[in-house]
Image 1 (cartoon, rainbow, N blue to C red):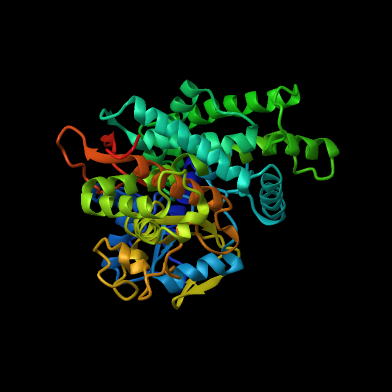
Image 2 (cartoon, rainbow, N blue to C red):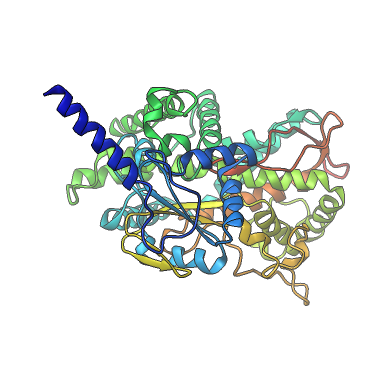
Amino acid sequence: MIYTVLLLFLVTLILYGFFSTIKPKKFPPGPVWYPFIGSSGILQKLTKKYGSEWRACLELSRQYTTNVLGMKTSTELLVIVSGEKNVRQVFYDKDFDARPDNFFARLRCLGNKNMGITFANGEMWKIHRQFAVKNLKHVGYGKTLMETEIQNELSRLLDYLKENNSKPINVVNILSESVVNVLWKYVAGERIQEDKLKHLLDLFRQRGKAFSVAGGMLNQIPWCRYIIPKLSGYSLITRLNREISNVIEEAIEKHKNNEIKEKDFIYLFLEEINANRDPTFTEEQLKIVCLDFLIAGSQTSSNLLGFAFLKALKSQEIQQKIYEEIDSVIGDRLPCWNDSDRLIYTSAFIQEVHRYYPVVPMAGPRLLQNDTSIDGYLIPKGATVLMSIGDIYFDPELWEDPHVFQPERFIDENGMLKTSEHLYPFGLGRRRCPGDSLAKSFIFLTFVGILQKYRIHVSNGTIPSDVPSIGILSSPRPYTAEFTLRKDVN
């Protein structure tokens, strides 16, 4: 009897392995599928060779001469789309609105299925995104009060730079702390304790390097966590989940005890829970929404500013031009968001940083709701779709001399600032980043406010590389710079 069972199990295993290598009809071209692991081994090998999953996918797209690349992990069909036409289709077509429910997504949602806002689907996503946008505005997010909070944080940054005048500083880490503190003020009514915040941001940075938009090895081969928990990133993300949960739970408990004075998002969410109008409003959902806010705010803006200061450091000529414009237009007063229309070259520079150093080179993931055609290929319902955005910013058909850093491309013949329909750092469509108002204001006010007072110099005589490190996001490689007070600043 036992031999019969073993034989049936073996035959089933062989049949499963065989059928798992058969590609659907009209599926996009891509690497071969192996039993049980699909294309994961090939993708991991190329990721190691080229330094990021995004670059690995670009190389595979080149090898197979396609803008729609088809692969398979051990658990799901994976499609990577390139080219602006295809990317815009995914951004705007409702069939691509959903998020997948895979192993990495559940880890990201603290072990839950499609909760929070980032990974929620359907009506729950619509309800909670709308609630978040409406009620963050209710407590001052995106209004004049937010600009004041950013200016206050800028003043703290300037004080820090003054205390460390001409000393080597890792500016990206400091900026991460600042943007989270501004965001957390609206979410939880207070700043996160400094030591705790530094520790959490370090874990976020480790997470960003260990994983990719597709989830990395842990998502492609989930059972590897039992064999290599550290190498796969499983130990890291479970530790991060535990520690970030403690921070959020502590904040929620303070609100339950009315220890926070001013109205904020957590208070409004708890009121909605107590009103018992919608069963999706729970404390667990509140935790994951808060996690969404922290993850979204912890790295994107600070990474972009890290690239901006790095470029200013590497090009003293550009830095001087920006300073002279700031000095002539606003003088010594604190910058405000309205200055973005007056500081033409500075705003053009920031747009060019968005293009030349895309912080989100690969966007997604999206779960396809129905069989859909992209570029002539049939993508089956249930496939996970990623969007390769970074290569659009270097497409010679869209940009003149795309590999040249040139802020002037965003200034028209009349010397006025112009925008480009081919640049979308905060996404497009219904899942566009709802925090773009904070990101834009924080980036502009912080960059202008610091260059207004300080000149940035090379630290230790070494010009840092501007080749990005790419994981889930693109970030500058760790570097230090010296910030010295300008001569004409008191």
